[in-house]
Figure (spheres, rainbow, N blue to C red):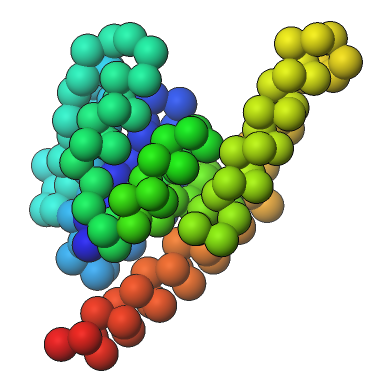
Length: 155
């Protein structure tokens, strides 16, 4: 398993959570971004720089992700592409996207975009909070423990 991070619109406060998990469990962590990131020289952690442009990082992640990998993204269309490849996605607020829920999440996203485009709704998501950070950490831990147990059973 590898963990890909859609790092172009990524809350930095969860970077440390991901790095600690990667180092603790020896899981490759791959940040994909169109700008340089300060990640240090740590084992299992890398950066793929992509050109600027709409969906360039998303396209790179969708191309590289393999079944069983995990992608950290707030981009629901990317999460849909990832899940269709038998991988998993978690958003920075701790929501896990799976085959069972991704189509509903995508439909809700499209509805909300339509409401915003027609002026029937304004604003966006709430500011990222400590509660969101904790929800992400809990979901990541639960997911990684579950996946590692499954991998060990398969061996």
